[in-house]
Image 1 (cartoon, rainbow, N blue to C red):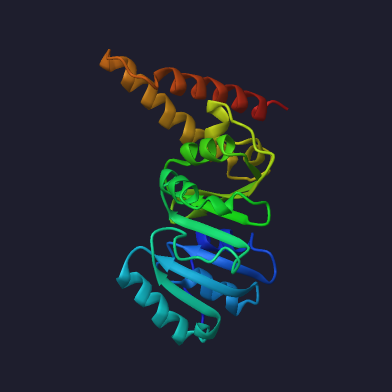
Image 2 (tube, one colour):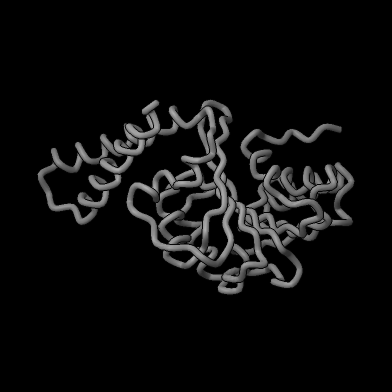
Length: 232
């Protein structure tokens, strides 16, 4: 039976090393962990979700697809139920970047280079990249994927060697810029348009806004990045 896994989750799965022991945080229906086991990519999966109902669906799906003997399930907040010695890869997908930053901050044990982090924020990607840089995580690679008319990016990160990123880099990292993805022009357009609207909206309001300078700097950096990207 074929697993109905989305393109965005396959983008996460493609970055999992062979034989990995995976923690799938916010697992929802459990398809990602099940796919990893069925394909032989992962050897074991710890699946957790904050809500009981989706987790029970993941349990049912694991039985249906024959992977329940290689999975464990927890109703838990973030990484609270994960034994640090049981995994080497942590996947967070389908939540905001600010939420992911909070999850990582609440689990100090992830600040260890033996753990691979695979992160796919649906919102606040700039907040997640900022957090990673400030906490010393290095972004090793980023990938773009289109799914259902939306663009998603997936970050592969590890503790060690990370440095604070500039406002522009928080929206479009060097690693994503160097990925060579054919989706980069569209990603540029979407981020630049969103930042332009944000800056214009703040300026029209004529009210003090503590982050106006941040957004203006990010926009200017992205415009310069786009100029260099388009140069022959």
